[in-house]
Image (cartoon, rainbow, N blue to C red; front, side, top):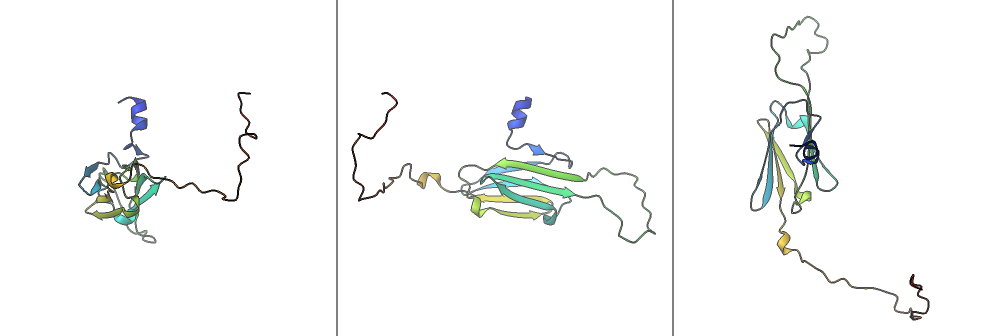
Length: 151
């Protein structure tokens, strides 16, 4: 993948210190379902926001474990530390048929599930007649006052 392609990738991860966070996206007959693996995190650690009407932003942070405050008697020695701490951020554009006002999310066993219902774009009219309003008392003075650039 070229640098330009990676910059334009709608599923690119920004500022991720939590390793390679995986996401699945499936489309059903009535919704889009996104599943993101966030092991070791709770729903309180995760933030889900909608930007610019169609860009979904998922962010999370895993903090280092700290000893309880005021308990200086406990001494810890790490022998192995492979679980990472840090932040995670992923942004992606939702499809045109997404009902952004009806997004639901749940988290269970470290998996964030985002369900975005779909609207049926086929039911929307392709064109719509627009009524033209105007001042009924206005009397046209003809084209005499019209100025054109082709004089």
